[in-house]
Image (cartoon, rainbow, N blue to C red; front, side, top):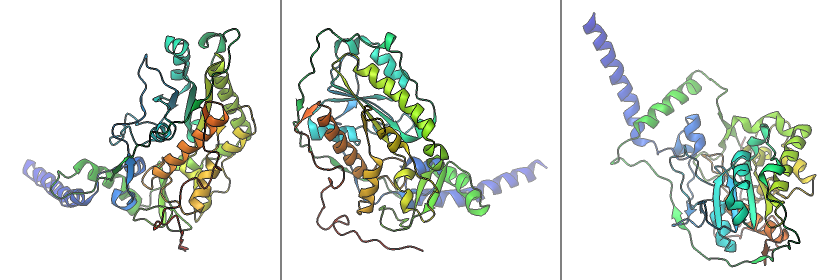
Length: 388
């Protein structure tokens, strides 16, 4: 009996090896959060255009006791997340913002609690930045945004305080390095764990038509929106299409909590506040889907309805850029911005800081059409192929 069991185990191991080892040798290492989370092949959804990275990074993880012109509280759109194996400083809109403006930029983890702790700290009292930028992902608004208790976390406004003079823009003119996505190499140790993970997640989807996972592959109405091998489909988080995004009452409650945070930040009379809500991928590409969602996100609309809330609208501009032929605004293998999306966010933030009086000499060009047409590239003469 024991010998028969051993033979069964050995045959199972041999079968697993026959499936996993060849797959492991041809799979590109996972680089996108959606390919890894959903068990999709990086070879198919990974971008084929290179990204950019500043070495050393221009923005940095904020250090206690350091002075910064701009302090950003952000998530995976602004900084590497702890669980990201390939996350590296130097490739975010925060780096491009420093390069475009010369502002010193520090980045911390987002959230009302870390921000409240910072506003109550000696750092904020003794070395207030010129601007605090709170960057949230749109999906975070599904949960309550905690306001801040102004009586406990803010510094009283000094008597007779005067508004600081705007800082002159002083571009650094640094050239980022090209960052190529890792590819499968036969002479490297194969990613056995990734191959097993992909099989566990992909086989039920492929063989049993199992749906309802955290990641969805959706068909696009046009090819050419992304540079990946999957020209007519791309990946989204399933939560990108939840109906709460159209609930005006809920979003108005979230707006009130964000306004309380703005009041807390600006109570010292020196620091300005800026809210940057990064639209989810599904919000920006909703109109380009072959089967579009029945309703559109109302987040930007509700935030803009309060002109006293200093928020940067991004969704409509990103959608317009995609319609104009700019590829990989979001990574085809991930839920966050690619290089062009990072650049657009940085330039839009710089212009908004000019309007807030933080910067002087900001580019006054419109929100859209700020990315130059590059001769010989697809965004000069966009060509789209209708897909059925």
